[in-house]
Each structure stands twice: as structure tokens, then as C-alpha cells.
Length: 275
Image (tube, rainbow, N blue to C red; front, side, top):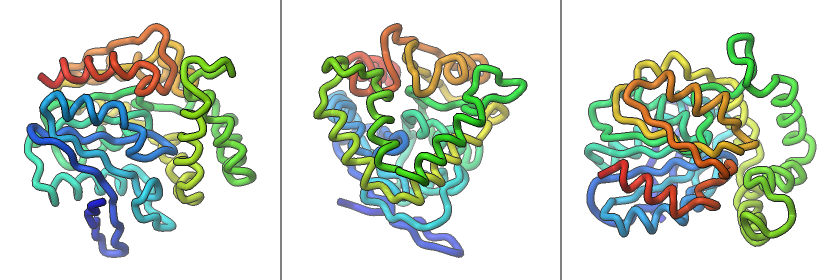
């Protein structure tokens, strides 16, 4: 698989990516703690729809390099910038799933919006996960600390419980198969343990509310109403109010992992938006 290098004064990190199709480029940015393989159902649909589709592994995940440090959103957005510049991509459409929404917003506010066509935030953590006095619907800090403690104590046990919740899975083979859960676990369990923890801190602690107001490109927000991993009240409902020129589509019965459970609908909505 091809790799781009993000070189800084202190480190050089290889970012693994796949690059399929031709046409206007679409970059897919996966959620935590998975890899570009989470986009399996979207890659084929977008390529067939006439787009050049690039999906990459976040540093520390998939087959990208895993440095010990460097998992805040400034650094993660610099990986996206390196990908866009080294591949010389014009008028890119960006799609961020869950944690990946953070890279999208930080890229736009740090590197500019002139070379970006449109953005889509899918089941995204934008604008803020953590509960605060002015964000009462957020996740209580105690709950976030419990996640970090579980990752440090028994990462694999935590992940085995995390993936069913990703899909609101109740053990009856709906809305996804046991094999899908096993596949997700195989991806997340092979991510670097340190990266898994440090990246979690990034999506837990970063407040994008001020940055959302700076976004000017057309923005599509898609979220599941019954998302138990990133509740819609603290994410999409706030994001659409903060981001100018944005539109929210709510999937009434969708969990967090709607890229799998509602793949056809998501693909159609993305294709219609990018036209």
C-alpha cells in the first residue's frame, strides 16, 4: 500500500492510504479506534459514482506508523495536510466519521478552506464530547476517565464491549452480524495501545465550538437519532447550529456505526451532496 511521509522537526511518520478511482477527490477519515477499512461500503459506492477516493489510516492505527506521542488534533490535521499536498489534490471533499470530524474541522481552520469543495460530518464528535456547564448534554468527565482507565487496565476487554455498543447490538444478530463485530475487534485490537489512549484524549477533550463558526464551505451533517456512542444532542444538533451553510440529516433508527447499518442510505446521501 502507498505511504506518504509527514516530516516535522522532531519526527517522521508514515501514513498508509488507499487511492482508488478517478475524478474529484474524496478523502475518508475513519473513526476511533478503527482504520480505513471501516469505509469498505463507502469506497466502492463513491468510486462507482465517479470520484477518486482516498482513505487513510490515522497515525497509530491500521498500517500507519505509531509514534509514542503526537495524537492531538493539530498533529492529526497535519497528517491530512501532508496527504493533500503530497498527492497534489485539488478541490477535495472531506468526510469525517466520529473522531474523524475533528481532523476535518481543524484542517479547515488551520490550513484554509480554499482547496476544499465540501465536507461531510458523519456520526461525528463535533463540536464537543465532554460535559461542561455550557454543554450539559455532554459525557460526564467521570465517564470519560472510566474509559481511559479501562483502556489502561484491560484494553482488549474494553474494546470487546465497545463494538457492540457502536451498533446498539443486543445479541440477536441485528442490526449487524457477529462477524462484523469480530472484524471490528480485529482492527481495533491491533492498533497501537498508546495511540488508542492518546487519540481518545484528543476526542474527549477538544472543544471545536469556536472553530465551527469559522467554517464557510458547504457542510452535510449526518447522525443517528439513537446513537448511544456519540449522542446527537451534544454533537450534530449543536454542530448544525454553529456551522454556517450546514444541513443536518437525521437517521431516526441509526446507531453510531451507521456507515455499516445504513450504508446504502449514507452512500446515496453523500453522492447527492457531492454533485
